[in-house]
Each structure stands twice: as structure tokens, then as C-alpha cells.
Image 1: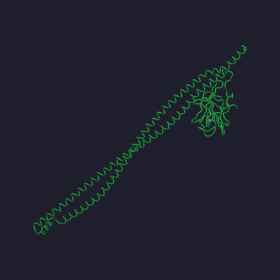
Image 2: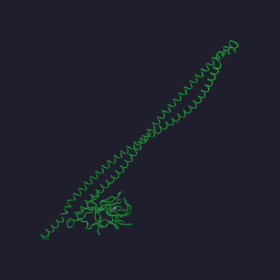
Image 3: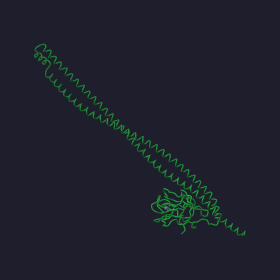
Image 4: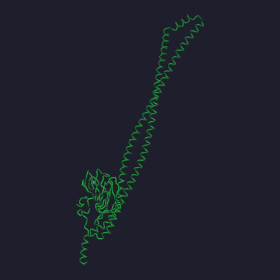
Length: 397
Ligand SMILES: [Zn+2]
């Protein structure tokens, strides 16, 4: 090889190497970036875990308070029932008392009648006449004394009747008053208990609402935690896969300088599955669709769009059975994602060649029908999917 040729190659190489050097330089940066992103993600995970723990503690405490409130309400309900029973008993006693009072009133009335009659008799018979008659009727002094004694008895008896009358009426009044007072007292007590019950019920409802809100927050945090954990796992696995790809690249193609810079037109990827394109890359249903959907009924094999390393093959809540592949093409890292697979037949860290079957089309995860959700990222995958591009121009026609 002449010196001239060497120079021209070197010159040509320089031109072409320049972007490669830029890539080579950015490779270390890329790893650093993945490392930083991973660390951030791991911090996120830790924070989410702390939040989750706090929420769980809060919920446990709130649940205890709610249980205590429930006990208070149960106790209060018992107290209220007891008071109402007591009130009922008092009312029954009052009814009996009123019956007795009516009977007593009858007796009083009866006595009043007797008293009235006695008074009429005494009025109708003036004392002089009465005594005179007594004297006339009395055949002897003994007889007279006896008659006078009888008069005395009659007067005493009237007095006694009057006294009894007064006593009975008094007792009746007092007893009725005492019962009425007790009734009033019980009514006040029952009212207070009912107010307390209302307050407790209202508290319970507020606490229950708070608990529900916290449960919802916990569920959201748990979801976010799972998502952050999943992202951290992908990033961790991606770091290993990218490192492996770069090492292989250095071994196999020490002078990748001859390759052209990557472009959408380079057609380095093949369509990963047979079928129709049912949904393209771009905004869909009010949010961004970061992939290309390919659908076909029946058994449809899903293949690696390019040779590379399996970042992760696992089951995700949203992606379903999913395979992430890392590719190094002309110094550029690419990441492809194959989601909603009915099954996958590759494992994390495994090398795959272009066109090699990695799984079977399905409808697992957040999917409504059998299709392949295919994503292409120029660079590494990240949670924000900021490197995602429309795969279509990259696929070989
Ligand atoms: Zn999709």
C-alpha cells in the first residue's frame, strides 16, 4: 500500500471516523448516563418505598382509630338502649302511678262526699237542737255522756278523714312530681346520648373517607413503585446488555469506520412479525403511542428485528410478556421492544441474530386483541421513552 493510499484512507477514515469517534466518546458517556439514570431510578424506588411505608403506617393507625370509634359507637348504642329501656320502665311506673292516683282520687272524692254529708247534717241540725234532742233522747246521764262521746267521735272522725285526705293528696302530688322529674332527666340523658351518637357516626364516616383516600393513595404509590422498580430493573439489565454489545462490537469490528452513519433509510431492521400495521407511532386516544402495532390472527412468530442481546424477557403488568433487545449498529445503540407476546423463548443476556424467533404474537398485558406492539428506540430505552422513534422508516421494505 502506497503512502498516498494510506493517507487517502486515513483521510477518508477521518471523515467517517469522526462521527464514530464521537460515538466512541459518547459510548462512555452513554454508560455513565445509564448509570446515573439507574441511580436516580433506584433513589425513586427508595423514596416510593418510604412513601408506601408511611402510607401503610398511616392506614394502620387510622384503622385502629376507626376500630376504637366503632367500639365507642357500640358502647354508646348499648348505653342508649339501656337508657331508653329505663325510660320505658319509668313511663310504665308513671302509668301505674297515675292509675293509683286515680283510685286514690276516687277515695278522696268518696271521703269528700262523706265529709260534705256530715257538714250538711251538722248545718241542718243546729247545735242547740241537736244537743237538746240528744238530751231528750238520753234517758240517763250515762246515756247522755255516751251520746256526747259519739258526737265527739263523729267530729274526730271527720277531722281524721280530712287529715288523711290532705296527706294522700300531698303524697300523690309529690310522687307524680318525682316521676316526672326522673322522666325529664332520662329524656335529657337520652338526648345527649343521641347527640353523641350522631357525632361519633359523623366522625366514623369522615375517618372512613380518609381511610379510603389513603388506600387509594397507597394503591397508586404501589403502582408507581412497581413501575419505578420495573424501570430500574430494565435499566440495570440494559446496562449489562449494552456493555456486552459494545464489547462484542470492539472484538468483531475493530474498524467500524467503514460503516456509514445510521439513518432511517439504512433499513437495518426487518419487520418483526407478519401482519397488518393496525396502529402507527404517534398520538392515539389522547396519549402518545410509542410503537407500531402489527396484527394477524392465529399462530404468528415474532422475530428479532436485528441481531443483538436480550436485555430482558419477562412478564410486565402493562407490556404483558415482553422482550427487550439491545443492538449495536455502526456504533449506535438501538433498543427494540416486543410486547403482548403469548410467550417468549429467549432469556435475559442471550445473544440473538436477526430474524431469529424470540416469541409468539399474543394479547397479554394491557392489550385488547392479538397484536405485536413493537417499539424502536435510537439509544437506550428509558421510562419517558424519549428515544422512541417511528419504527416504520427503519424497517426494510
Ligand atoms: Zn401498540
